[in-house]
Length: 308
Ligand SMILES: Nc1nc2c(c(=O)[nH]1)N[C@H]1C(S)=C(S)[C@@H](COP(=O)(O)O)O[C@H]1N2
Ligand SMILES: [Mo]
Image (cartoon, rainbow, N blue to C red; front, side, top):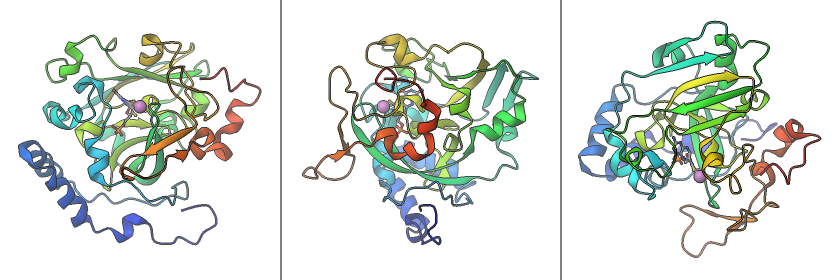
């Protein structure tokens, strides 16, 4: 939905939950069955709809759960779907430390109990020039930052993914310097579009999508949206981030979606919508992935061509 429209029914309203579930069952195999059994107890998340959602049609759960980047499970698009069932997500806790009033470990339940979950239907643009539309379920990161008491010296937020090589086969290779790390400037982290997602398609997140809690920053390339977070650290200095450390000429800290700044090895001017079909035309990439009205002010006075 866009601002100002009188709440027309969304795709989620007209797609019965049974359809999501049968799609998930279609994935087949013991892993999918287990995942289904494990989530049924808390299935059918109650969510509030948001005016920040796009009215573009979401991808199928099939696309979203089988075409993934999660290098901890391998570099192939279907590796996460095949291997992520090995990840133990209960119990789960997140260390929230650095420049906060009371640094400590937060259990997943402590983070989410009493929090109203919202559905945010966002475009997702990978730096590899494919895109999807995803109905996330989550809450604003800014609300959690308010609860932890950020100290005035803090200027950045650093995030880390779980490091557990016995459950994450990709971590037994050196494809990245583990754990996966990401970061935001504090004002980016506090922007209302920036959420921590605990679900998608009105169900708890599947492991391959970053269960049980991951970041979603819709105006930046997908690699900023770090999965399966175990640590959030408030810092004074710009944090080191995995893709920037691995190839600084190719992946910047800001990584705002920008059709005018090409990746050194490919154009960013257009993108392929996953699931659109073999013969569907590529679509033009939008500045800030279409979220410029909301976020361009964050970068006033900065040279956007430098902010790759
Ligand atoms: N920990 C971790 N987070 C990650 C990644 C990863 O490899 N490891 N890949 C990123 C990339 S490149 C993208 S495009 C998105 C993909 O999210 P999805 O698979 O849920 O669509 O996750 C991001 N978060
Ligand atoms: Mo990506």
